[in-house]
Image 1 (cartoon, helix red, strand yellow):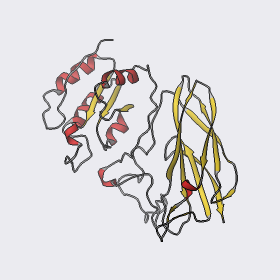
Image 2: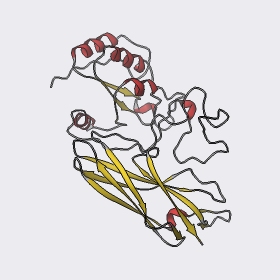
Image 3: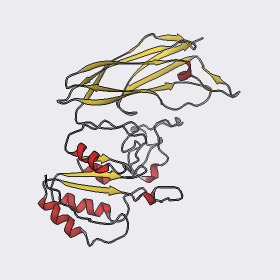
Image 4: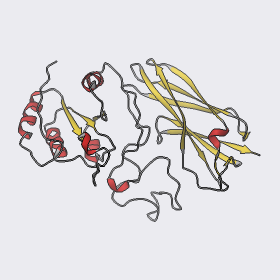
Amino acid sequence: TRVLHAKGADYSGADTSGFAEAVRIAREADVAILLLGEHPNMSAESRNRTSLDLPGVQQQLAQLVHSIGKPTVVVLMNGRPLSIRWVADSIPAIVEAWYPGVQAGPAIADILFGDYSPSGKLPVTVPRNVGQVPIFYNHKNTGRPPNPKDSYTSQYIDVHWTPLFPFGHGLSYTTFAYDNLQLSAPRIRAEDSIVVSIDVTNTGSRAGDEVVQLYLRDDVASITRPVKALRGFRRISLPAGGRRTVTFTLDRDDFEFWGPQMKLIVEPGWFTVYVGTSSADVRQARFEVVE
């Protein structure tokens, strides 16, 4: 493998003098790899920006290299979510590396050459635009939840109300299918536990790891509760074609919340369980807590 390199542009600033060399080697290469993001000094204590867009002329560089027509990969190095709508719409492969440290080169190379199948999941929500901030998966419900058929609800007129990438999202070089979500009981008492199980199948052609995530919602409560909250996750390894039943146990610690008297309480009522590959890609079932 022969690696060609050009600086292209600085982290910030308006200097485009390196564009020509970057385009030249991109034309010569089989695959173009763009390393984009923020300098560590841009995302640290007392280091703030008013925009989450790629700083400087980085997006211009990406658009120019993309226009050549070569297969292109973007590797992001950043300390916070960035609004990368154009990159997500135009570049077929994005590696979120964050600030990876001294072993960044070998780790990224292993991913790009397929020696390791990625299995990480986003610990944050990535917005489409800075105007969506704050945006997070475990938000409280509103009086007018988003409804595509009703313009007078909580949504935007210029972008979809959902994030660009949801909390828990992450792709692999293989694919996984979820089915047969089961609960051990339709109703329980507050002091009881309930077992949640689901079957996960590796439907791809190579082995891989998957992080199975479980979220819980208290459907109706005396105090507004999050639309869903992460209550567990399991990392599993499956060969191509492999299948496994993954189980979670939920108990009082997962149901209770701080009540009006500042005591932990569990209120009777319905709960919804969500299990899936991210906070947005889930299967669901319901059970009831009774007195």
